[in-house]
Amino acid sequence: MEGWKTLQSGLANLNLGQSANKFTKGFQSSVQATKERLGQVSQDEITELPQEYKDLEARVDALRNAHLAMLKITKVYDTEAYDYPVQIQESISELSNTIGTNFQNFAATNLKGTPLSPGATAPRPHLETPHKTLPHALTRASHTASQLLISTPAGDSSKLGKALALYTQANETIANARIQHDQAVQDGYLHPWQTTLSTSINVAMKARQAVRTSRLELDAAKQGLKSASHARQEQARLEVENAEDDLVQKTEVAITLMKTVLENPEPLKNLNELVKAQLVFYSTAAEALSGVQGEIEELSVAAEGEYRKSRDH
Image (cartoon, rainbow, N blue to C red; front, side):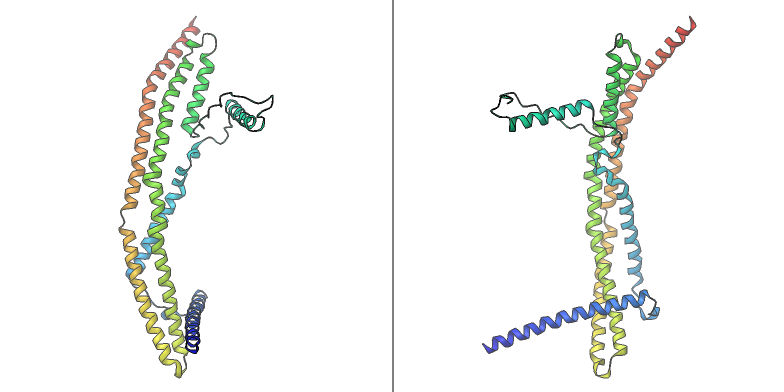
């Protein structure tokens, strides 16, 4: 029993010693960082890191900032309505359909068995939520405009109505291509681009932070050696040697990780996927508009000719 108590006491002292040592290192590193920030440490007392390491740091910083600069704009592709006109309100028909569906659901749940019960009426079919993109908005707007003109007396002869119907047709193709474009961008570029930033680049940044902490611990240990009493000289010298070994090891790890990040071909592949998706979309849009532009121009020329002819009489 006495031996067990002795063992427990020894383990407790060991853990306490490790915690105290870790706390002391952290405190000394914080003091060292503060002194450097306040200019209380001369430049020759700050351990110089290898030039290769500093060059890699600059390149990784540039790569990280390049990712962030692109993401600042391209993250909109995660939201369908990024180009949807903000001033558009839900149409009356959409609103009435929503109200009708909500009332029927309420009646089925709360009025069952009463004279107001909807009985065995077939459930109202679920209406698909309309896509909220600019091409979809243009499709709906031009279709509505065309129907307004064509539905009037002699509307079948409305050249503007026919032109708007052609424009609707083109925009419907463009709208479908827009949905496919956004999905392709998300899968091939956006999500992998974000993953690179949050994994490999982030790992390299953490390795660099470990180097910085180790360098501060080494410089703090060197300061401790300078001020150590004769009795602590050997212990202080050992602490400096251990800190030097730790810094060398962490620097090598960070260099390897930074090289790996910089050699990674994924960002280029991701950018290529973005360009491919945009090329397909804009080509589809150009083809759709080219397909109707000639007919719309013919309608325009005919309308202008009729207008001039009517003014000649």
